[in-house]
Length: 292
Ligand SMILES: [Zn+2]
Image (cartoon, rainbow, N blue to C red; front, side):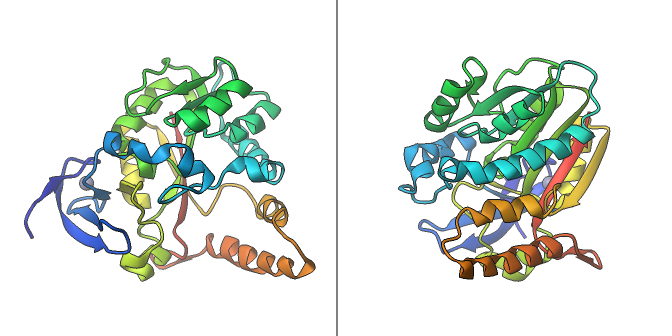
């Protein structure tokens, strides 16, 4: 196969991997021969036009659910998340939380409830502008790949479903590493392209989206974090918190008793996300925890 690109994660040789024709224009996915990292040959800057108001309100080509519609219920998940991370946080300095891709600031409200000073970084002026009204002076508008962050400042940095949107994820991880206090902890949630779900679905895997530029697996994400300097890295299948907050969150959308059947599906998925068969993880949900 002919080399057609350079892997943004390890600098290795990348070749054409697959065309995702469910999108117009189709997405061209390249894959690193060395580390298996998959990526779209698009720069982050070229993709930023996706994150206007339409992205958050359902008017865009592809969209994100506006968390404000379901805020009360989502708070159960945010608080469960913060509680879990607080236990892992080994930093000794001031307790400060940075949520990268903080959108409307929901997770940060959970962080405040557990004694963290909240900080957010958001590329979207639409979503970040809203968060700025809740946390004046604490929300920065910018891209984590090049935004100048204070050094050794945060005890926790969270990046939930954000890293796949970046064209230069390694630069983002380096930037975050410098901004963390020693003992501080980073949470990265994204898909594991080596999970069985992604492998079985192939080109029709729903994670292939125009705004998703980077596709990791648990091996290449862990080695990138180590290379950046993180002293310990831990893979968590699914999410780092329990099933109950997920059930509470989903219930807010139920309209009748019959809707409780969704709990069966959610519970099965949650259990499946903890299962590994041979070298494969059953679902493709991945949370990676890294300590500085
Ligand atoms: Zn690579």
